[in-house]
Length: 326
Ligand code: UDP
Ligand code: MG
Image (cartoon, rainbow, N blue to C red; front, side):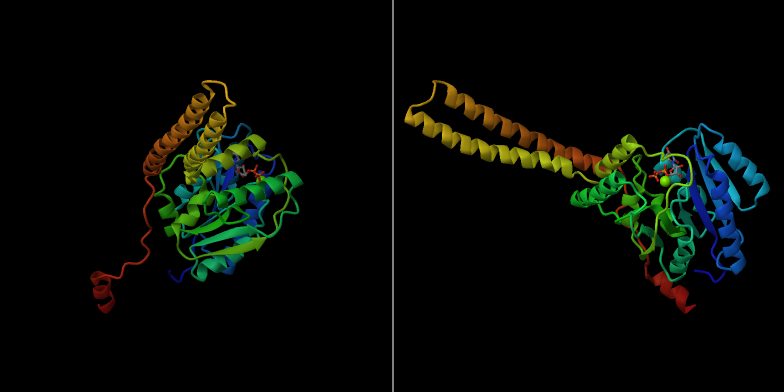
């Protein structure tokens, strides 16, 4: 880390956000201006608005603001690609221009006052700082229970996520560079970022209500997002097929014993025993076979993502020794 203040890029994905844009731009500008005056961040710090193919005049507002406010930058995507992809696009555009990025939603539900704390943690040596909600008081009962159920379910499926953390986080340039090595199409950043490694920490804040406009995550999108999260990180659902198959075979053995006993007691219709046995047994064999094929497909799926196997942080080699003793 160099001693001059870090260049910060705040990345804000926007989809039909013309109602909140003026307030958001003003508030973030105030924050960046004051932080750079304090000398906490470089004066080259910027706020990058990513227009995710909005249908309203969000882009015109970004464009106009860019012309009169030196802190504003804009990236327009040609079509709507969804929150995760839009955010990823913004981070990739920013990664070579800054030392740290903070991603935040356009509706400012996340507390901008947590950003200075995140920056402090960066100076203390963290590469990733997660914004974590301390409570869910502002959420409806429905959103609260479904969201918390989702985190628990993800954990059960073996996906490592940070509890109660959405996409409000700080990332250093090298963390963003590593993020760029994840080439998958189904972007679920909350699952990928913890895979990067490095020193991380959390900052706690109270999440507010949306400033204006409506949530861009209706139930349908929320469910498909959850489904995406599970299927892009876990092949456990496939393994479940084999488990069910094995269970069915066990049941078929019990059914076999029962049918044989009934047969020998003489209280069965002819043909019933063989029919029942073959139905259960074949069903079990088929499920186990599908499960087995599934295992291979699961492996192919994991391979097809081309995820990096590891993220080398430090390599103490002869070369570094030679450089140090120079
Ligand atoms: N968003 C986006 N593309 C989309 C949907 C949403 O860029 O297709 C942005 C949106 O503008 C906002 C953020 O993603 O900045 C989160 O959306 P929202 O606040 O509606 O979600 P919620 O807070 O209700 O979960
Ligand atoms: Mg929101």
